[in-house]
Image 1 (cartoon, helix red, strand yellow):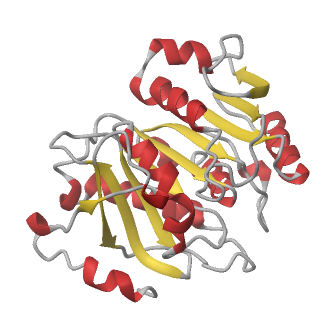
Image 2 (spheres, rainbow, N blue to C red; image 1 turned 30 degrees about the horizontal axis):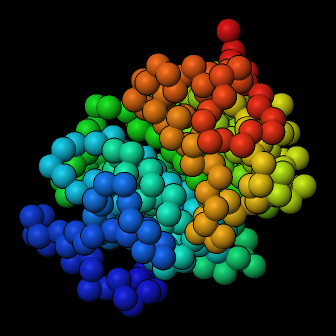
Image 3 (cartoon, rainbow, N blue to C red; image 1 turned 135 degrees about the horizontal axis):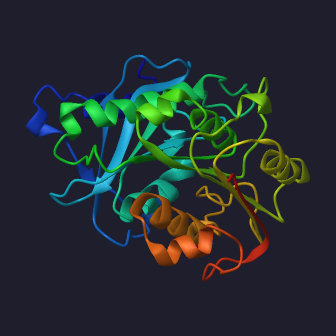
Length: 289
């Protein structure tokens, strides 16, 4: 349901050609590197309760088609709070040349449990973006797709990347920013079908930092990279405190895995070549033969 009344006038898309795209600014009016527009669309079929039954979309303001990336928010960040915390990272990824979609359902109170089925809603939003006529003019459905998320949404992203559905949707990579272990999370279910990047930091809570390294050690997948960043706290990739230490790693990983940039691949397919501007403390890379 629409819990946030401010969205009710923004999601009436009876005429496909009349979608109300508006200029998208990152949090605190920071200007994206390229012009972006955003909008909201009604969504059915979500598994998790709370927040709003909407999907948020932000994309380059041009007439080109772009690959899709699906974002998963952390606990307490459903509904309007999606923007309070994550406008910055969603807009930045969109500015790299992507259509970013994000499910807006889920609890808006961080003291309530994170939904165990959020990974299904992340994949559902991605599937919708690939199929809906309302984005047909903007989405390159043949280019491959990606997943990214933060905190509990990072753990959910790893679970989404472990589903057969991820292969059906042509997912090429997943980024898990500062994963947090939520109730009923079972690491045995994490078997990514695609390469994954996990980010943590020396200012994260020790339990979260250790959880990230435990995941690196325990999960099985085609390729996994974990990077610990100096000065990065748990909410590094949210708009509080808007430090975004992980952006250089995001940029290079996406450039390699989604766009095939060879220079970026030399930096993220191993730990020998440093990523410029990334304050890396620890780097571990494992690729299954």
